[in-house]
Structure formats: C-alpha cells, structure tokens
Image (cartoon, rainbow, N blue to C red; front, side):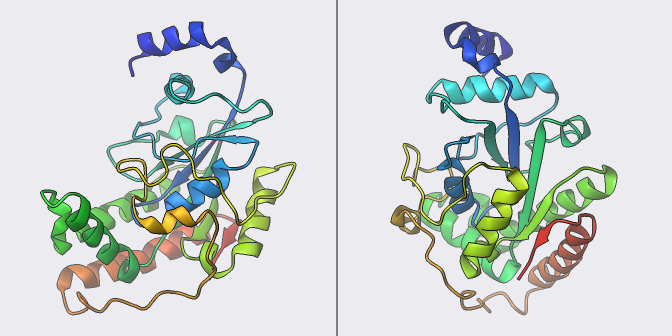
Length: 258
C-alpha cells in the first residue's frame, strides 16, 4: 500500500488517526509466532494477529500499518494496540521505531533443531519451488535472521521482553501472565484464541492444521531432529543460536526462558 492509498483509507475510516500503541513480535519463521499472534490478537485490546509483510521506518509506517489492516478489518472498540510480527530481514525496523515511545517489542527465537527442519518441511509441502526446500538455504536464512536480531539489540538501546519460543507451550500459564503484565492489559491473556479470517492461510502465518485447535496444547519440548546434526551448516546454526540467545537475554531485564 502506498501512502496515497493509506490516506484514502484514512478518509474512509478517520478513527485510524486515533492514537494506538504498536506491539511487534521480532522473530523468525517456525518459532510459534502464529500461535503467539493468535493469543495476542484474540485479546479485546489488541488488533492484528498475522504477519503483514511490511517494514517500519518512521511514524508514517505506523499509519500505513493501521490503514493496511483496516482495509480488511475493523478496529476493536476498546483496543489500545496494533500488532504485527516481523520475521524477515528485508522488512526493516529502524532505530527510530525501536526507540519510539508508542512501540513495544517482544523478541523470540527457537532452537535450530526445531526451527530449521520445520522450515524445510513447510516449504517442501507448500512451496516446493522455493530455495528453502534445501536445508542449507533454510539454515542460512535462520543464521542471518538471528544475527540481525543480535545486531539490533547491540546497536540500539530499547525496551523489549525476550522469550524462548517454546516457553508458550511448555509453561503457558506463567508466560501469559507475564505477557499480560508487560503489556499492561486490563484483562488477562488466556490459553484460548479465536480462529480468524486468515487463520491457516498461506503467507499469513502457520498454514498447518495445528493452529486450528483454538487453544494452547501444553506440551514438553518436541523430539529433537538429528537429521542435519553432522552438517557444517547446522553446527553454525547451533553456535549462532547460543550466542544470540545469550545476547538477547542479557540486554534486557525482562525475559521468559525455559
């Protein structure tokens, strides 16, 4: 959407100009981000639940986000937040946005033994022509994304809550309670969520059937995939994950970890 189109949307729905806080989940693919988006987006104070595939550069980007969202959705009457998740390096979040008082951030990563095989499996099923059907390419995306998140927190001092991606399934009650507190919501986040218009659709997040349950299925960590254990690219993934996790956790006082 161009800024001209955004302005046209504003004229049609002037309540877009009402001030909102903006909540961003900075992560990577196959890190339980669709589940997190649905849990957050089912709350009456939060608009949005899926990936909008846009970058955030200035206050104009925040207006564009609302206008784009309002092309297909109405803002909730008592809402205070707009939500989006940013999972790819090509969708930049600038320092000006990281330090914007209206912007709030969650950062989450998942161990490569779960994330990388899941990326490969997804693309082999849904997009067999994509480069991510090759494990080394999926691993390269994973490494570059984690390196970008590390660089972000080192480069710019901003407030965020870090959480391990699997903690929402392993310890949902405590995680939801602490997210509720961090966001200052007037009612608690719950383990149940709505199945919405884009739930399960390709390019909007997780297109697997697991998202259709409408609630968190509490579980221990899944079995570890050892398929790529001896590959050099996978060893680089593991090293990058350990460094990134330590860095992300050390640059904030707010963290939820396994």
